[in-house]
Length: 305
Image (cartoon, rainbow, N blue to C red; front, side, top):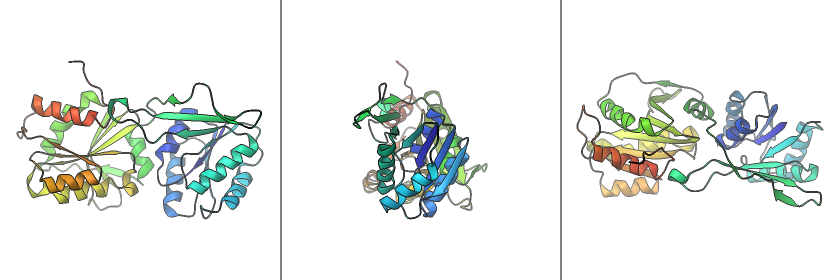
């Protein structure tokens, strides 16, 4: 099977179907824009057999369609088209190619319920003998966990390393990681993207299935206001870690209402751990508060007790 992917800024809606469908070859179409080209390169690095090609400007549908026809050729094996990524004209051109050649198509659902009901869903469509579009039997299907945090970071960054320096907030970060660890699939701490001269750091990341959360953690004071929100929205911007990661701001002290409003407007969830004392694990109350809020956003595991 050959899987055709359309590279935009966001690589995960392409990476998950590749991992699930396991094609013999992945063809990755990208535009001349640097973000699309880099996304294609990173996706190719995370797949087995992949070939990238440019469709030039990503907005002229007839030209894109001609390029797709030429690059795919007339293969003997099945071709599946992933419509999820790329520009809208790229998706329209890919759909038209699928319609003309009766190729099946897939689409990864990027929106839906949050929290414990959050799922990774893939839809697969085909054209019947009369040329009518229909959803294939067994779809939409829920995708199992297909990526690691390393995959997620490599899909979005040119590389990363860890900050091993001890900081004032490290004790709180460790306490939060310990509280979350039994309820998530994976945790990483103190991740620094390559190429930013250690000016940006991700305090904590978690993975629940195919879903990722990014945490900025502050012990309090002035650092828990607008500066902290800015730091989180910078490191969790679409240019760094994509649009699908959940963003959390955790502070030991109360955050002013004006900064809470700013965080809310920027899709940042604020969590206040007011009972925390340095050097100790989170209190039962703080741990429960942390898990209650995170579970409203991410599909973390919760005990029955």
